[in-house]
Image (cartoon, rainbow, N blue to C red; front, side, top):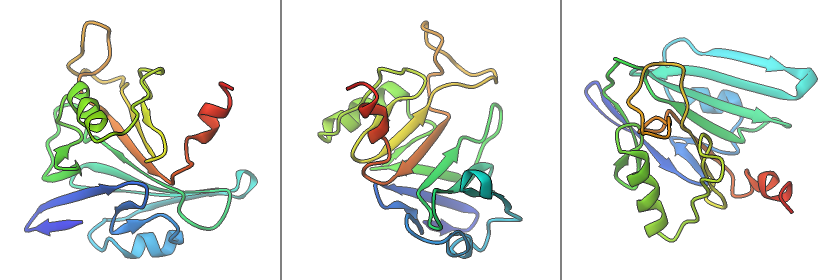
Length: 171
């Protein structure tokens, strides 16, 4: 993460995390990495072996997820929402994830040699890296003729095998 004044860059570093939050940290360690996070909401569901912490950085929603253990397994970032602007940028190899057209974002990812799976158009993934995106919202947003928002509305960084179950179900 780079901060300059009020501006902040959250740099996606798949499959390691979103610097400074790294996969494999405990939830408390993840919370300690971002002192300007505001008041986080922490949810623990022992029956589902799930815990997550949520906070906002310049209107960008951040969630650190702990699934099936005691360490962060994924980090998800959410766009600020319709009509909101943010000084926080979410970057993937220099592309601003929430303002770059999704088709361009995925074309550039493919140009890096990554496989971009758009077989579920509202939930495209880049397996192995592992990045997952959401292209749906109930809010008013600019849309393509197919009804999908022109930009992604969330991005999740998981470990290298995070989306393996999606492909095992196909086999």
